Every structure is written in structure tokens, then in C-alpha cells.
Amino acid sequence: MLTSIIPQRKGQFTIKGRREDLANHLRKAGNAIGKLEIDIYSFRMARVIGYFEAYLVTGTIQNLEDGYQVEYHIRPHYFTQWLWWIAIPGNFLLLLYSDLDLASLAELTMAPAWLRYTAYLLFILSALLAFSWLVQSDMAITERHLKDIPFPSPTQPLAVEDNGTPRS
Image (cartoon, rainbow, N blue to C red; front, side, top):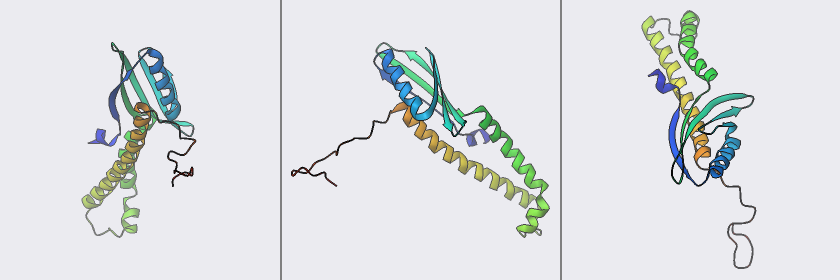
């Protein structure tokens, strides 16, 4: 259960062409995601939010006959992963420590202790699960940057009327 809360994504894709095509693809993806470190057989990208690396994209490169197969794994940064593991028991212990104050604030003093503790634990797990869904959606955007490099925005109108004015 706890490992499903920590978000991660895995997958693979194939790039047809030469080694330069693969390197250009990974460089463009690295610019869109954050930092890039590339090797002959592997690469590492870090999704940078502000000054911090939020999560990592690590991958391996296999040479095929007509291209390259890239396997990737998107997972939280080690520091962020440790925060996940500390947050689950840490928040629960904090709430247990301040049980009397929270119970009086929530007017649950008449409820049995096991009900309060269960409610606290379910609240913490639901908050972590909701936050992991947000991180998963950001990882999906990163995965799209990694696999499908976005094209630059067009500088001209895509469609023009017969009289020469741009369509709305």
C-alpha cells in the first residue's frame, strides 16, 4: 500500500535514426524537463522546480539495428522519497501526540480513541494519495516531454481566409 503512494512511472520508446538523432532528442527533452546528464548507454534527467530537483528520470539506451530503444524510470528524488517515508509515520505520530488538543478542537472527545486514530490515519493517507496524484500528473507531463518533443509554436496563422485575413 505504501509503495503505491510514492509515485513513479516506467516505460520505453524507440527512436529511429543515427546516434545524433537520439542525442538531439534527449537534449531537447532535457531542456524541457530540467538538467540532463547523458552517457553512451544511459542518461539521467532531473526535473527542477525552483532550485530543487523534485524527481529523476533515469534511463538506459540499447542499440537496435535501425535505431535506439530507450527505457526510462521516473521516480522521486532521493530527498523527496525520504520525505514520503518520514511524512507517513511522522504525521501520524504528531497527531497522536496532539490528540487531546485536536479532539477538543474537533469536538471528538466523546469518540473512542481507536476511532480518532483511524480517522487521523485515513486523513493522512488520503492527503498523501491526493498529493501523489498531483505528482503523477506532473510526471505524465515530463514523460510526454521525454517521448514527444513539443514542436515550437507557429509564428504564422495556420489557416487563412480566401481574402487573406486569418481565420478565427
